[in-house]
Image (cartoon, rainbow, N blue to C red):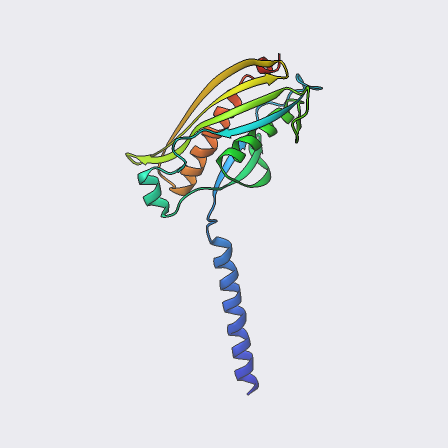
Length: 202
C-alpha cells in the first residue's frame, strides 16, 4: 500500500514538472515588439506637451494574407518591450497599434527630457500623430513590416508644423516568429525615432 502511494506521488510530481516546463515553453498569443530608445539627451528638458494619436488607417488588419496564414490568428495587440542599448529595460504591457505608437512616442520624448502630460491643458503644445499604416506580411520567405504617419504640432493659436514619416523593415524568415517580431520592432523604432521632435517644439 505504501509503495503504491509513493509511486502515485512520484508520478504526480513528474507530471506537475512536465506541465510547468511545457507551460514555460508555450508561446504567448501576443507578438513581442521591441522599441529601441535613441541616445539619451536632455536637450528638451523643461518642455511639456500632450500627445494625441488618431487612427487613420484604412486597413485595420495588421497581418497580410501570408502572415495571417502563418500565425493562424489575427494580431490586434502587442507586448511592448522598452530597450536601451543591447538589453530590454522593461516590459510596458499590451497595446493595440494606436496606443503602441503613443507609448513609444512618450518613451522617446521622456528620454529627451520632455514631460508628456496625461491630459490636454490650455496653453500646452500638442503633437497629433495620425497613424496611417502599420502592417506585417510574408513575401518570398521574407518578413516585411511597414509604418506610416503624419505628425502635426499644434498650439492654442493653431497649426505650427507637420512632418510625414514612412518606415519599412525587412528580414529573411529563418527563425519564423522571432524574425517577424524583430521586423515589427525595427519598423516601430525606425519610424518613431525619425520624427524631428526638436523642430516640432520650436
